[in-house]
Length: 124
Image (cartoon, one colour):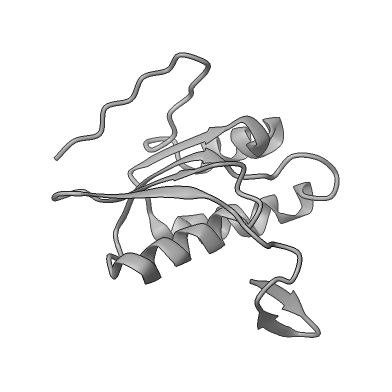
């Protein structure tokens, strides 16, 4: 979605995006984004809509918040992410340095640093 002429509408510039959504028993949804071009919040809302499950346990992947064009939306994205209250937040590659540090500050209990070769186990 995009705010166009003061109204939320489907974003005409986002033709496709990919994410994996897993419903982990007794935990909720684990959402693994690719580069998150559609926006991580849009992806989380879509995951809820598609599954009918409201609880977001983990969000892992690229949040596409790096660079001068996307850095202005770090604050509203982090604020919106707070409303999902995920137990695990793992920002990767295209999230960018500034957004990753902001997320680490705002989600100290949920933030998980990672790098190439990081293995995560999320189970019921």
